[in-house]
Length: 130
Ligand SMILES: [Zn+2]
Image 1 (cartoon, rainbow, N blue to C red):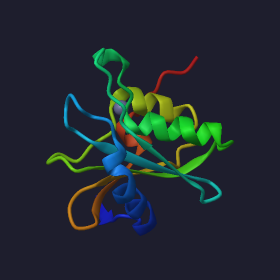
Image 2: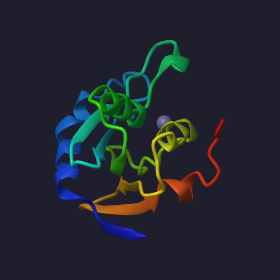
Image 3: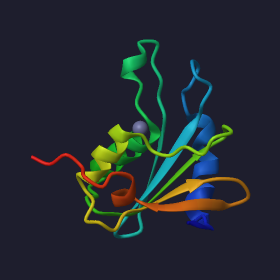
Image 4: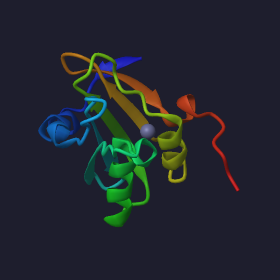
């Protein structure tokens, strides 16, 4: 479903996207994660010449949020300057699912402030659980 992107999250994304470190793919991604108290945490993708060590923006944002003491999240916005809207990968969805109570809304930014509005549970309906 399409919706207006949350303006404050999109503003943060636009302010930080150029900080992404993506010299190999050129695909700069930024993620902004809002916790239950309204605090927003930003992450960008960080690539590595040993490709498998690359970390996605979503997990960087999540790890920043966990470091900041947050545990419950309401919204995640993902943005890229590239032509394809950056739907979170499976690894990031699994990492986010650890802290999801079924209410996390994921906004994938497209053009002109329009987002695809998704839920984590729709993208990863059966996450791994111990
Ligand atoms: Zn990912």
